Image 1 (tube, rainbow, N blue to C red):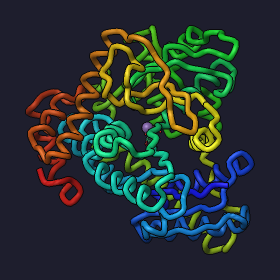
Image 2 (image 1 turned 45 degrees about the vertical axis):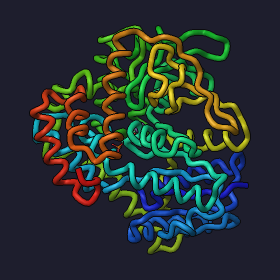
Image 3 (image 1 turned 45 degrees about the horizontal axis):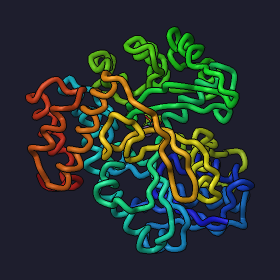
Amino acid sequence: KFSIVIAGGGSTYTPGIVMMLLDHLETFPIRKLKLYDNDEKRQHMIGEALKIVLNERAPEIEYTYTTDPEEAFTDIDFCFAHIRVGKYEMRELDEKIPLKHGVVGQETCGPGGIAYGMRSIGPMIELIDWMEKYSPDAWMLNYSNPAAIVAEACRILRPNAKVLNICDMPVGTLRRMSQIIGKTPKELDVRYFGLNHFGWWTSVKDKEGNEYLPQIREYVKENGYLTQIEVDTQHMDPSWQETHKKAKDLLAVDPRFLPNTYLKYYFYPDEVVESSNPKYTRANEVMDGREKKVFSTAREIIEKGTAAGSEFAIGSHATFIVDLARAIAFNTHERMIMIVENNGAIANFDDDAMVEVPCIVGSDGPEPLSQGKIPEFQRALMLQQVTVEKMVVQAYIEGSYQKLWQALTLSKTVPSAKVAKKVLDDLIEANRGYWPEL
Ligand code: G6P
Ligand code: MN
């Protein structure tokens, strides 16, 4: 049985993950569950509500929540990390500041992602150091954003740490693909190459070796990845429906492969900006939606003293976390798309780039599967983007304004060095206290 700490325990994602874990106790047994957050108030709400849930569902699990790192990281096998440095107030600025200058405003792509990366590196490294100090054998399953920059920072600053970087986006898109062809994700093996939030599927096969990419392509050409079942059953926010639909325009640019939906920020930044409301962004949607909903459910549970009648939703999309933890714990050799150092997995791409590729995951971590050579179009796009990510980490370490300005200038989402500077200067102002002095 395993001991887990969830870092970012006061997050509104945490209840969904705990509910998902409770659903998987037979295949992933838990002896101890701890929530850790540095925000006392949020941690208290989510922590108290989940205490009631756990008491009713699995009283045998030893449960605590805390804001003390030593308590959190002592005697754990896994840390599930999903921290959001600066929370939604800062996400809002990450989105609104670039938009004010006519640039894509998104939490992980473009200047917003760069700003968020600059905030996240320090606290991520802090978490890793606590884990290594108090539970040196533990693994961190990290899905904190912006995953690409965070992963690069881990590579440079803590190269030997047992950190597994993973994103739910390929998982979610594969689920949609499997619905399109009437299969389940577990019945499919994919080939994929790219960077985080920046990649392409080159093959989707069943276990008998039948290739489904052409069939999926026909569907995506018309509908993007949007499947009706999902719209009906998951009550997907309109902005996400738009993103999944938009994949058809990404596919049109290169019909050979199936694109990651976030490529829309790089291929169609002008359209993204036009259709954005600079006064009401995704951060506002989430604050008015998920944040309110989860906290009000928490309040209800606490007031009633029981979870009966006001259950947290299961984060069913988060089952990849259990798959990954099981792969490490039980050496399952599950095939999963992860963010790892390239080292030849993409033959004609830099060895030291953090790329997103399928890996076989066992007790020693991920072993990347070779994806061969990639076409020059994707290679050039990836080189530009990965260089942005590397330069952000260098700018963070060196405290270099110049490098960060270059990184913004290099981002495909930013039209000129002049605009890059304006956006950067506003971001510096907004991120005082979060970023190192530049
Ligand atoms: C996808 C991405 C995550 C991102 C999330 C944002 O799942 O893979 O990296 O955090 O979308 O979703 P939200 O609902 O907060 O806009
Ligand atoms: Mn992601």
